[in-house]
Image 1: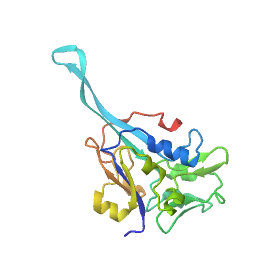
Image 2: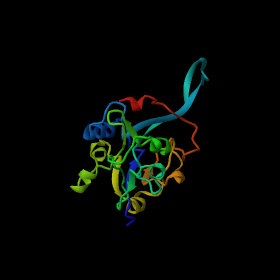
Image 3: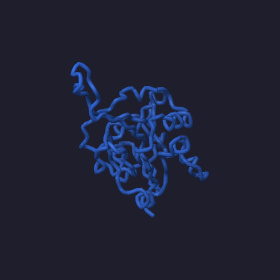
Image 4: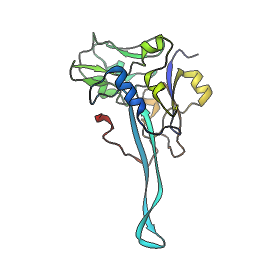
Amino acid sequence: MSNQLAFYFDASACSGCKACMAACKDRSDLAVGVNWRKVIQYGGGGWVPDPLDPRYPIPNNVYSYAVSVACMHCENPLCADVCPASAITKQADGTVLINTDLCIGCRYCEWACPYGAPQFNEGTGQMTKCDFCVDLQAQGLNPACVDACVMRALEVGDLDELRQEHGSIDAIEPLPLANITKPALVVKPHRHSSPSGQGAGRINDPFAEEV
């Protein structure tokens, strides 16, 4: 075992319903605009003239899939490296947590994280983010997002064990390159997925963070 808790995400199964996102917001009572988990729609393709009647376009290699993203509890968490108050620490099980007693709300972690995981709470003036539902896991339960997924596209477990079962892919479009922070993540790609940095698609849901 690696002593590193991790998420497994099956992009081939995710329907983009955002139940995981809603469960996370409900469990942690997050304010509007603060989302510890986000569901991003990514797609590509285009349109070409119908060969039978060029006046009408037809789809050409059109595709779309969803990616559920939260704090990756990275092996190399840049958020912790840049925090001037030492408010972000990596625990023995690999979970990366924010100590709100120390956080000064400078937002350096927000700028450093390539996943956009740290979220600023306007009410408290401090940073917040996914805490891996440590209270639920302490009771032997799954994180709220995992149990809420109707397609069973999310799992949590030891990183090495998840890799043995599902492979070692940890970056597909539109996620950033994995070598930046070494995310504790295993992904089963969608059939149209490209490796991070090699895609020709675009994010199609720019307002996903406003809920």
